[in-house]
Length: 282
Ligand SMILES: COc1cc(-c2ccc3ncc(-c4cccc([C@@H](O)NCCN(C)C)c4)n3n2)ccc1O
Image (cartoon, rainbow, N blue to C red):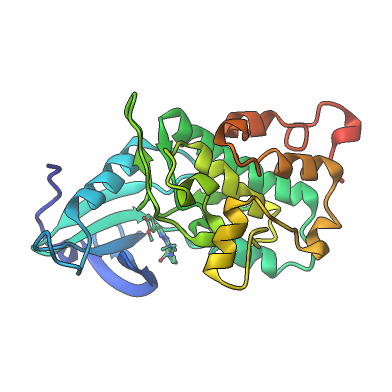
């Protein structure tokens, strides 16, 4: 069992405003007392008894900590420290203050394809890094793709929320039905064994409209669209999309996980890495 620091987190950090919250608990801005530097604290309530419905199972927290400790990369949020009290674990993480990628895009009149490629490259570099370590994120969706700050040019992507991530062991078969309907792979819905390929399927929404091509009026309709690989693209965005970008997206929207491009293959696709001047996005 992993041992986290038993000291009181407030002896080392001033606890600040809530940045976000979810089923997991809260993310709050925290300030390190010695340096004055700002960090993000992910505050997690831990189940006190196994049958309790309140709080998280400690083993799931240990899994996220193990994975975050294994992945140091410019496009993956960094973990600094972990504190534990009687019923709470606090992850001290690199503060990501640029907000969600899709809010940044929504504020722009029009996103150039060259800007979309830059974002996609950074996301793919982060995914390539974790996939090479046999780690899948399994919750890749717009709100988990953030910008490190509001000033860097180009903005620096940070993948966050590894609460559903999984480290595959050799020969292991892993199944999960967790995730968000419009951003999960068909093999999750059909309870098939999962792989890192499940992260690739959802990248299609990264034509950077942020809209899932599978979005239905209800979760049931959305799940049906994912299973049947029935999708349509927001005409406003797709009509502006180059043939190379369409080819890239369609090579990700493959029902069979083994037919989908890997992150490494995506980085070599002509939309991302043009081979001839003709392939360079405008
Ligand atoms: C929420 O889980 C994580 C958050 C973070 C994290 C790290 C740095 C950081 N700086 C700012 C934030 C932040 C700001 C606003 C909202 C959130 C989060 O609550 N929303 C993520 C959505 N997710 C729960 C679907 C997080 N974060 N979040 C890292 C690992 C996690 O498992």
